[in-house]
Each structure stands twice: as C-alpha cells, then as structure tokens.
Length: 143
Ligand SMILES: Cc1cc2nc3c(=O)[nH]c(=O)nc-3n(C[C@H](O)[C@H](O)[C@H](O)COP(=O)(O)O)c2cc1C
Image (cartoon, rainbow, N blue to C red):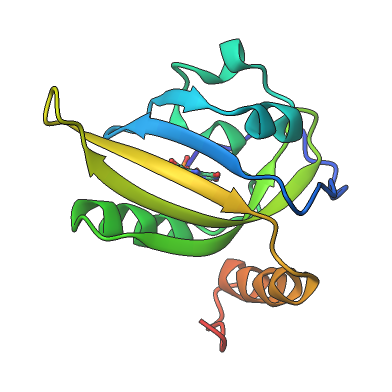
C-alpha cells in the first residue's frame, strides 16, 4: 500500500456542481484528468498524467475498499463508493465515485474511468465511521 504524506486532516469543501473525472489504463496509469480534478486535488495535469493511479490515495482509506473496486473492474462491472482523497498539500476531499471499464475500439484495451461527485454530509459521516471501524479491525455495520 502506498502511504502519501503529509496529511493535515483539513477537509477541502468544493462546489457541489464539480465533476471530478480521471481515466486510467487497465493497470491504473492516469491518462486523463479534467479541470475539476486539477483544481480540487492540487496536482497539475503534468504531475498527474502518467502517474500511478493511487496519486490521491489517503492513508485513512482501508485497503478493502479498493480491493472491491479492482474486483469489480476484473469482472467488468461498475463500482461506486464514498472515498476520502488526499490533496497534494495534505488536505482531503470526499467524493462519491463511480468507476467503470470501457473497451477501447481501436486497441481493444480496457480503459477505466471515474466520475466523482460531492457526497452529502450524511454520506461522509457514515463513511468516516465505517472506515474507522475497518481500520480498527472491526466490522462496519452499514456496509
Ligand atoms: C479509474 C480509477 C479511478 C480511481 N480513483 C481513485 C481515487 O479517486 N482515489 C483513490 O484513492 N483511489 C482511486 N482509485 C484506486 C487506486 O487506483 C488504488 O487502487 C487505490 O488508491 C489504492 O492504492 P494502493 O494500491 O496503493 O493501496 C482509482 C482507480 C481507478 C481504476
């Protein structure tokens, strides 16, 4: 697991109309980020493109959440969940992420795309609680 630092635990609030989009290869190398991704994460397009998929990984996110994402991609199924992401400066922003694979018509390779929306305060507090329990080795009751 990659540990990105620093972490401030300051939450970045952002516009509810933002749509944070990124695309990766099947191995998770970033091939596209949109303007909202750049503005909210704090990484420039140059810093993000070609990087490992876990550039915005926050250390508070349990590994199990991403295992289910990659299992869904392997089965060619869409995946959704609430994710705590880390900004370049160590702050964080919560997203309601939708990830799915598309086969590219030219090379037949799977391309993975994520569109992320701003979750509600209620979704954020439930996810915070569930991830804390998972990180403590306990069973989250809402998942
Ligand atoms: C299209 C796509 C978008 C992703 N978006 C995020 C994201 O916003 N935040 C995140 O932490 N992981 C995201 N992931 C999952 C990461 O690739 C990675 O599995 C995760 O950060 C865990 O990193 P680790 O393997 O270092 O533990 C995404 C994966 C794909 C395929």
